[in-house]
Length: 253
Ligand code: G
Ligand code: G
Ligand code: MN
Ligand code: NA
Image (cartoon, rainbow, N blue to C red; front, side, top):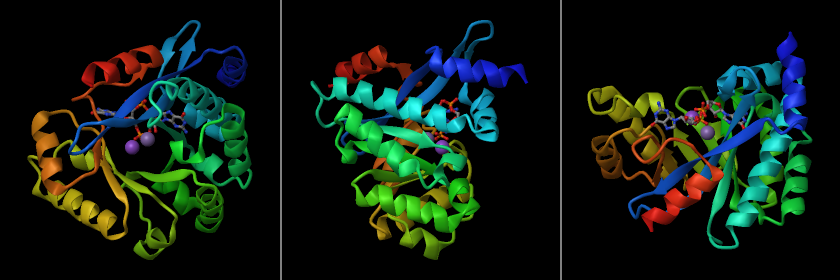
């Protein structure tokens, strides 16, 4: 496919962009973390969403170069932001394939060293699917990262089938409830029950619990009643480019 070559060139030619989605702490409404989300400014096809090229990168091995670019770019940006906001951290999504590479920790440590960002100011978001693929190896990679102080979040939680005993053993800091359970919460008693149970499970395991896909004030209120620690979603803002996200955060405080 022509697109594989184009994507390889896109990484070196700086055609990739990062947008940032704030995580809004609850109940105080502070923003102390932004999630980096990659886009591809394609010369002919416009701005492509990650769903249009991350799976291709995973299949072809380009994902390691992509992940390295995202990590380095997000941490460089964070090091600039931290001169004025030293409590800010950044979250980076780690693909299933990268998660199962034993050299992921070294890639992460190199990016931290290069940018001077403290490990605790980086949160890696790992999907449940990535853990199911090779539980043992993923556990080793996570222990290595966590041991160095990097923070770890289990993304899209509820979509996969992580066993509860496995979950308790992993060095996680955060559970992120998948938005499929959040978006219909108000109409669906089942979804509300799932969200309530995940919040309770997370808190019993000493994890922060974040809900994504918050689109209305009513859902935000319902989530607060259940005691979530953070929220993300279009109710606040869609993902924004670097300059706009800092203006957005600044305007809130
Ligand atoms: O930004 P958007 O909602 O279009 O993202 C769609 C999906 O792409 C989400 O599941 C998100 O986690 C994933 N994604 C966004 N940026 C990255 C990235 O830098 N690396 C990986 N592996 N996935 C990403
Ligand atoms: O899988 P992951 O959690 O990384 O996906 C993050 C993506 O979810 C972001 O790229 C963002 O575009 C999308 N997203 C975030 N909040 C909302 C929301 O409130 N509604 C919808 N439809 N998508 C959202
Ligand atoms: Mn994510
Ligand atoms: Na998600």
